[in-house]
Amino acid sequence: MNKLWEKDFEVNSEIERFTVGRDREMDLYLAPYDVLGSIAHITMLASIGLISKDELPLLLKELKDIYAICQRGEFQIEDGVEDVHSQVELMLTRRLGDIGKKIHSGRSRNDQVLVDLKLFIRQQIMEIADGVLILFEELISKSEQYKQVLMPGYTHLQIAMPSSFGLWFGAYAESLVDDMQFLQAAYKMTNRNPLGSAAGYGSSFPLNRQMTTDLLGFDSMNYNVVYAQMGRGKTERNVGFALATIAGTLAKLAFDACLFNSQNFSFIRLPKECTTGSSIMPHKKNPDVFELIRAKCNKLQALPQQVTLIMNNLPIGYFRDLQIIKEVFLPAFDELKDCLQMTAYIINKIEVREDILDNSIYDAIFSVEEVNRLAAEGMPFRDAYKKVGLEIEAGLFHPDKDIHHTHEGSIGNLCNDNIKELMRQTLDGFGFQQAVCAVKKLLA
Image 1: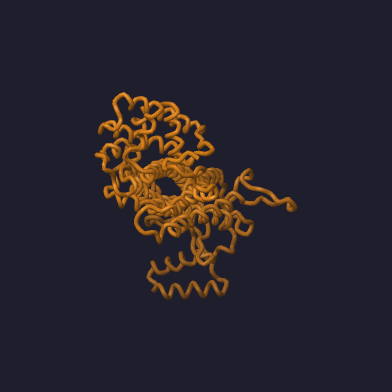
Image 2: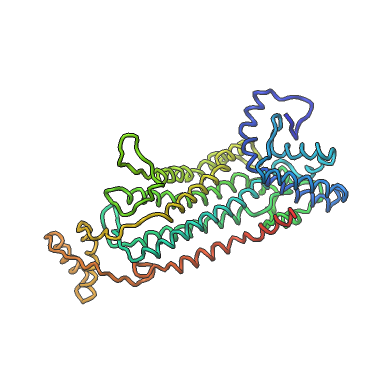
C-alpha cells in the first residue's frame, strides 16, 4: 500500500485493514477539495521559494486536470493506496516525477484533511441552503394560496382554536428561517483556514498563511495552530447541530402531513403518485415518502450526539478516533438534501380541503372568539368564559365562524412578507459569493 509515512518496514495486513477502515471510501467525498487545497498550497510554496517558477505551472496544470477528473466522478483511490492525499501525490509523481513529491512541504495530513473537510462542508452548506430556500418558497406560496382556508388548531391533540392553512404552511417557512440562522453560524465557524497548522504545531518553513486564506476564499484563518487542530471534531459537531435543526423542522412537518392525510383527519390529500399501496388492501395510499423523511430526519438529529461521543473525551492534539467521524458525518449532507428535495416536491403538489370546519365536531374551537366578543362588549373576561363554557356543556353554543384576526402573525395578518425579508437577510449574511469567486479564480 502506498503511504506518505512509509519507512523501511511493513505494517501487519490485519492492522492495516482495521486502521484504514472505510477511510478510502469516505475520502472520495473529499477528493476535489483536496485538489483545491493543494493548488492554493503550492501557489503559496512558490511565493516563498519552495517550488520554482518553472515547476509551479506544471503542477497547477496537472492538479487542475485531476480536479476535472473529480468533477466528472471518475476519481478513484487505487487498490494499495491509503487515502486521497496519497492518490493525488501518486498521480502527480507518475506524470511529473520528483516534482510531484514537493507538494507536501509545509503541511501535514492533519491540516490537509482539515482544509479538505472545511472546503467540503462549505460547499455542502451552500447546497443545503439552496434546498432550504426552495422548500421555503414552496411553503410561502402555499401559505398565500390557502390563507383564507380555516382549519382547527390543536393543543394536547385536542381541538383548540381556529387556525388556517396560511398559518400552518407559514409556520414551517418561518421555522426554516431560524434553521438557516443556525446554518449561517455553522458556515461562519467552518469558513476559517486551518492550512499551515500542520500537525498542530506549525512549521519551520516561512509559510504565508494569509495567502492561502485569500486564495481559498476563507473569511479568516484559524490563527492559533493548536486550536486549528482542536477544531477537528468540533467543526463537525457544530455543523451537525445546524443540520439537525433543519432535520427537526422536516420531521415535524412530515408527522403533521401523515396525520392530516389520514382518513380520521382528511385535511390534506397527498398526490397519488407520491404514495404507495398495500399487498393485500387495495384501498391503501400510504404516505411512505413522508414517513421515510420523518425517520431519516430523526436519525439526522442524532448526528451531533454521535460526533460528540466520538471526540468528547479526547485531550489536545490529533487522534485516529477522529477518522470515524467521517463515516457518520460526510453522508449526512446528501441525506438531508434528498429529504429537502422530496419535501419541496410534495408540498408543491399537496391538495387542501377547504370545507373542514363545516363539520360540527369543530364548532367548539370558536368558543374563544365568543368569549373575546363578550369581553370586548364589556363583560368581565372570567364571566364571559363561564357563560360560554356552560353553553357548550348544555349543547346551546352556536359558533360565529366569520372571524377577523388582525394582529401581526395571526390568521388575518400572516406577515409572510416579513418572513421572506428575514430569509433574504439571513441568506445575504452567509457571504457565499466570496468563496465562489475564490474557487473560480483558483481554477482559472
